Figure 1 (cartoon, helix red, strand yellow):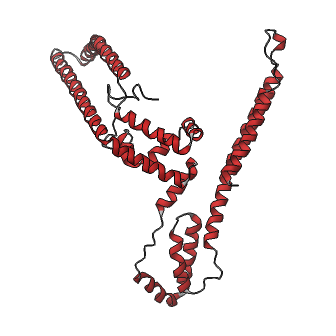
Figure 2 (cartoon, helix red, strand yellow):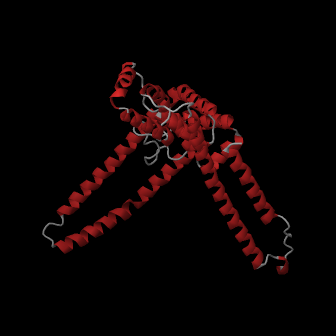
Figure 3 (cartoon, helix red, strand yellow):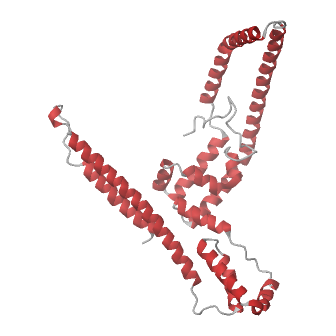
Amino acid sequence: MNAKTILSTLACLVLGSAIATTGCGQKKASGNAKDGQTARDVVDRKTRVSELSGQIENLKKQNELLKSQRDAAQAKAQMVRVKVLNNPEDIIKELPGLYGSNDSAFQRRRIHLTESLVDSGEGSLDAIEEFLNQGQDTEPDIAADARKRQLDRYGITDEQYVQLEANIKETLEVMKPTLDADKERRDAERTKRREADEKRRDEFRGKMREFSATLEGLSEEERRQKMGEWFRQQRDAGAPEREAREAQERRDRENREPTATDKLREAVEANVKVIVGADQFEAMQNDRSLGRMIGEIGGDEYRQAIGGGRGGWGDWGRGRGGDQGRGRGGR
């Protein structure tokens, strides 16, 4: 029984106890104040809920400890040898196999064996030269470590990871023409908004220059007073137009059909639900880890396609009046 199974079992027992404590044996309200809950009942229930919350936190800590112990045991099992490595040749043969991970247990073992080579002095030079001549790659597999942490973080198997990665890539390839066309539309709308904003700014700057010319010869205090009054007048005069523009932008967003980006996200999430199962999918939605998992597995190409990467489509939805939110099909 692994750590996750143990935690799940214990958590179910705790939650079952909570339900039994807080949900059973209570009479329905009859409208009589005497039939209501007493202050002691409320305090007892709150105390019980607090105790259960503490037990759940303890279970989480125990789960982390179990996972740590599991990883240490796996590392130890991989490094067990039938004899002590005393000579440089055996050490050289051992070292490459320790670069499959960069976890602390593997790091300590590599350091220990490397120091053993140093202790051997000149006697290790021949073995080291022979190894270097083989041209083997002995860099730690950082990607493998990161992937292992992802599997633990999201509670998925390596097989599910491979399925999710392939599915996201395939979905992106199928929808690429639609996504590209949608990007062009957004870019055109963004350019149009930018030009309109720049035009309004130019008009405002022109009015301000004309008004500033009327302040020549006035004292500094008078200039500040009149300038403040002028800015307030301009703000009030422009309020109806500004409010109308913002209202129109809200209507445009509310009436916009689902975009290609919305459809991409929905298609990917539907496939994820099939791969990980409905229960886990819902749980990941509730704890907000679903989007993070998909973004990590999908990589830069997926994150840029939905507006979560740098450059490219990364500023999607940020402009006023653009594809803000998720459209009608958003959640």
